[in-house]
Length: 578
Image (tube, rainbow, N blue to C red; front, side, top):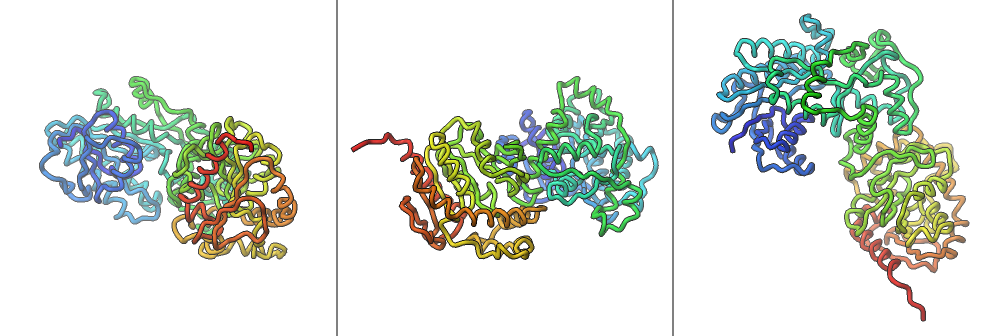
C-alpha cells in the first residue's frame, strides 16, 4: 500500500495517537516502529480506529537510511518524527543516539523523497531557555541537553538539504498513557507521599492535552505558511505549581502539601532525601513562553484546547485508573465524584444501573471487572471511601451509600461482598422500595472472624507490610497482575489503618446484622465459595460455588454474573399468590 504520511516513533505515547489522528483524517499512514508493531495495532483496535490505510514498517533511526525498504515509501509527502529517548539518568551516548543522530538521519532520509511536503520534528518547550547557548550535558543532564543539541542539528540539516521543516515545542503532554515527568509528582500526591512541593510559588509547569497536540501536528503540513516555523504548543493558562497541585489534590480527595522547598535547596540535598532526579530540577522554572504563533495557527484551523482545569482532572482520572501504569486499563466510564463529601472513585452507569456492586475490604472495583462483563445490564461500581482509589471519609459508610444511590433512577440489584454486606443490608432494610433485590457474597457477619489480631497494636503494621502473596491466600485470590494493584492500594497512606478500623467495627456489628437479615422486606440471596462456608445458620437461600473461596466474583466471574442475572430476572417476574 502506498502511504502519504510516515510517523517515526509510532509506537510511543504521542506517535500512536498521531497515527490514529492521521488515519481518522483519511491519510494512508506508514507507522515506523522498531519491533513488530503488535502493540500499536492492538492499541488502535482498542480505540476503534480503522486500520485499512495503515502499513507498519520496521525502522531504526539510529542508522543511516533508517533500515527502511526502498519500495513503497516514495509517495510519502509528510514525515513526522515523534521518536525520542525520554528518560532521566541515561548516558549522553544513549540520549544522543536517538535525540540527535536519529533526528538528523530522519531529515536526511526525508530529503530524498520526491514528493516531500514537510518534515515535522518534535522538540521541547525548554528550548526557549537555551537562548542559543550550546548544550551542557553535565549541568542539564543527558535528556534535556540532547534535545537541545538535536534541535540545532535538525535545523542545520534541513537548511543544508533544503528540507521544508516545522518544529513543534510542546510542554508536558497530558493524556491517557503519560506516566513520566509531572505524572510522577501526581503519583506521589495521590499516594500521600509528597510532604512538600518542589520549587514553590511561581513555578510554571505548563501542560498541553494530547488530543490537541496531535491535531496540531497533523495540521502543520496542511498549512503552507507553517514551513520554517517554530511553535511553542502549551496552555498559557496552566496554573502555577502550588495551585495545580491543590486542584489535583482536591479532585483526588487527598491533602495538598502546604510547604515548598526552593530549587536551590533541592540541588544541594542528597537524592535519597528529595527522591527527585537532579535532571528534573531545570524544569522547575518561572519562565513563560511565546505561544502566539501556535495560537494563531490553531485559530486559523479551528483547533482549540479543552479548559486546562478540566483537562488536568481528566488526566488525573486516567492516571489513577491504571494506578499510574501499574495495572491494566480501567473500563469506562470512570472518574472521581463527590459522594457525601468524599471524593469517590466510580465506574459504570451512575443513574440507570441494573446492578450496584460493592467490594469488600482490601479490594476495589477491579474485583468486579470480570463479572460485569457477563452481566445483562449496566453496573455501578464505586471504590469504598478510604479504599481502592477513593479518598477517606470522616462520615459513616451508611450515609455515603445513601448518597451514592440517591441519583439512581432504577431499582437495581444491590450486590455486596464481605464487609460491605453490613451497610448494604442496612440500606436494604431502610429503603426496600429502592431495590429489586439484595445479594450478599461471602457476608463476613455470617462467617469466621478475621484471623488478624484486631485488638493488637501490631494489626496495622502487620497488614501494611504483608506480602501480596499472603494477602492473596487470605482472600482466596489467585496470584496474578491484580495482586500488584492490591498492594499499591494498601500501601497508600492510611489505608491499612482504615482497614483494621473497619474490621474492628464490623466485628462489633455481627450480632445486629444477623438480627436484621430475616426482617428484610425484599428478595435476598447469599453466595459463598465452597472453601469459605457460612458458620451461622440462616433461612435465606444460599448458593455455594464449588472450587472457590472468599472472592468468587474474582475467581469465578461468569458463575457469579449468571447468579446475579438470575436473581434480577426472578425479582422482575410478576409475583403470584396461592
